[in-house]
Length: 207
Image (cartoon, rainbow, N blue to C red):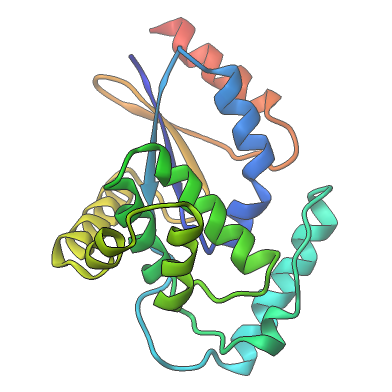
């Protein structure tokens, strides 16, 4: 079976905007492709507060997304209630740690992180937030907390990031169809799954 590879970061605002269109695409391709989710790792670990300039850049991005993708909103209280850090690796590792307790928890944790960040003004750069989200998902908290900090989890994130780079991915979200001998990059459409589906249908039909 051909693979649909989705490269994302749970704290990537464009990935949040892409949620509805991506879900429609996956539903339309159900049973026809294997969906593989890779974590791209947008921003490495840091304890430093995000610069004012970077905060402005991200807030401007949120405003643009709200303008171009109908129905997508952000809670700007985050910038007043949290200490923002340009650090998404912890959230990526949380997805991997959740995945250890069942593959379905990959999507569930990603969604929980996005809602916490963009709707509830919580900070997924903080382990405390991620552990609370795991508790909300009724995961084994002791196992999750252990897996979150395990060296194997760090290695797994690096491997997924390296795989994405080898596939030529340099932005998130990214979509690819992978066959036995080659892969195809699928242009992301944030508002309509149809163009993506048509292109993938053509690829599948030619194999």
